[in-house]
Length: 104
Image (tube, rainbow, N blue to C red):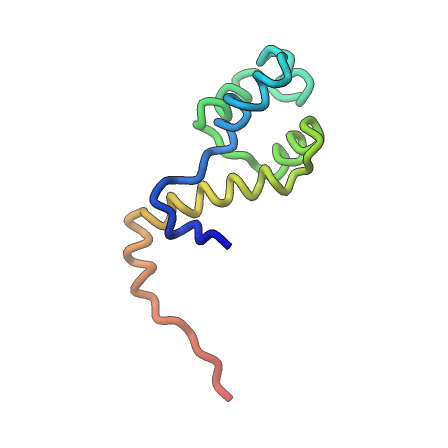
């Protein structure tokens, strides 16, 4: 299994997958995709521009629309977010937390 935190490069944002792979394969306009997802065009554009994350509700929409289920979309977003969080300033402080141990 791949350790996301050990990867040198950030996992691809799901918006990039939509922009680079899914939409061209479908041959649909962004406006049509937004309409079919029942979201605003600005919302779709923010996802495609990697400015917005895939929420659980959006994962449900995308999973239904693409026919591949919501789990893949939410996992892609989680991997992307976790990788970036692990390289944040907060992660340095988190690394100093002493792990808990169970007492018998």
